[in-house]
Length: 234
Image 1 (tube, rainbow, N blue to C red):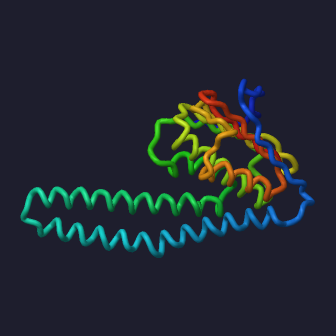
Image 2 (cartoon, one colour):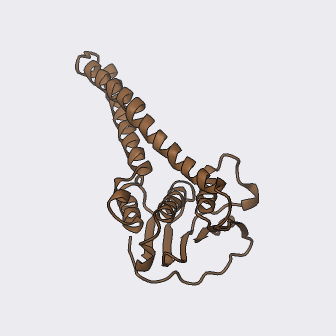
Image 3 (cartoon, rainbow, N blue to C red):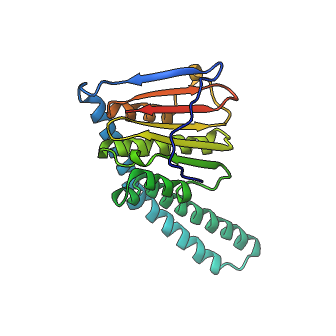
């Protein structure tokens, strides 16, 4: 991972790709803004449910499995219980990671670019993807709502590329300032056909809604075996 203070290089549209562009004027009604706030509320509720309901149950289940393992005289059964303990420990760790991902404490202490750097370095599941952050310093200080939107959009795009795109490299660039700023997330993964996106593909939908909520425009370009480029402008 590198961080460079330079603007994003020029990029041309890939052959066969399709643009999916959505824009909302900044003087438009408050419905998109309310939608963005709703998304944040849902993520916060999700984190609370994990922390207050699911993680305690996983902890109790792990403790009971460990107790059974320690008192078991059957080697085969003890081995099975040890495997179960391992699964429960992994589930607990994943739950804690999801809580941190949804409610990153770094956003309360620093700018959104630094918070995204922390997410890339420690918030993702294990992977071997090169993630290159090319940040322009003037794009770090944004209005709070825009900064949060950019963080969430970049987070969503990076996570999708790591988990689903089979990408080898992801490049994230930011240019501009608080008056006019641009975020681009581009990967070299397997891409997709924008005309045939499964109905359950919530990542792209969330990116579009978050962009609309802050009065921005998003262009999503992708093609099979040609990677994906997400460009958000405010």
